[in-house]
Image (spheres, rainbow, N blue to C red):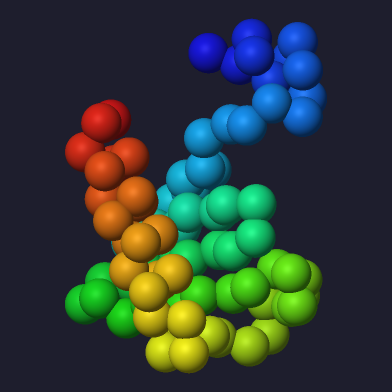
Length: 78
């Protein structure tokens, strides 16, 4: 239901989930996590890297793990 965001664009929403091939992605306000088949992860911090050129999954391992959990929960809800 997009009604809250349409009524108030600044209202918090759910993280966006996307699929491309067998890869899965989740986007928050500040990060994008891409999970590849086999478990490899890419994490991009849009606060410092809007062009997604530097994978920070190892440096921000807690953020990557938290976002992966959110992704798995969202996929389970579908």
